[in-house]
Length: 400
Image 1 (tube, one colour):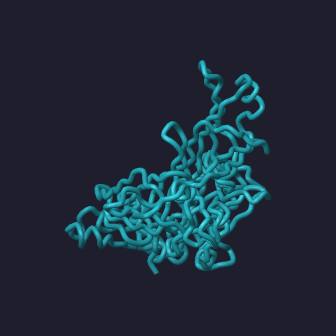
Image 2 (cartoon, rainbow, N blue to C red; image 1 turned 90 degrees about the vertical axis):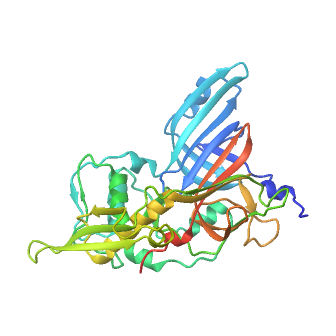
Image 3 (cartoon, rainbow, N blue to C red; image 1 turned 60 degrees about the vertical axis):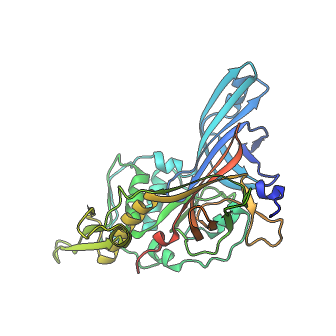
């Protein structure tokens, strides 16, 4: 029978701190923090008790106050407060703060003018949209490695993906003769996402390094070594990391057997030629018995200029459908876990997205790496816990 220590139930330092304008709120009665690789921005709601009047706290930290959210001593994200709400009862005054990370301003902003992005690379587009949203002092990275290390507290050897830099940067090979057309009043974040989808790229806010907002333009790193391990073995009274609950989803209702994307190449001088890129979902064809031609999905994207982009966009459509339809969820105690790559047995890592989890699960028959795409940190009457959303890493290996 294995022995379990308090380390397996979350560390004693699994504390969520909220710093507002540089001041730390010490008492958090409850909170709900969500961070995702694929869904932006990160959000939180934190409720705290207060000995003074609600007005005192609400005037001291009004909406748009700068915040820093910290878990187990590690900054997770920074941004601005969206809302401050107060409730009073016999027990006293409770104030709830709601906030989103530094990408919220881009998410909420609309284009101030029409703009055609001729001969533009993806980082050109991101730079323009951030500036148009009023975000002028920031840092942009093309790898998420440093951000993962800051948030988790662990160093992990993951090679820099130079292909991402090449696709995203003007100094690479991603020049486009005809990119998307931004219209006045169009959502800036939605436009960015639409264009970045063509290259399989994602934009997210990183943990602030102290020099202003930091953003990462990258792709999911599903090939890195595992940082965590979740074990559920049948016959054990308790399992490692204390899995409170688990669920497995396998829903094919929105998936297709074949994804086809239509684009256009050329210009008015040379003549325009149609482009067709296709990606097959072999699991739907082989494992579930559909035939090619059944459950097809198509899309026309006029800004796609070559076959590689069309195929990549078709693959991305399939990857999104597969992610929405197939995932594993574990709810575990605490917010940290003994790290697989720690220097000592006492080293703990904060659960962090864009990492890999080694899963050993007899109940669901999963034995191997899974990609951690979303985490939710919570504390309420049910205790302190973290919910992990895992997907198959093979789904996010782009086609060659």
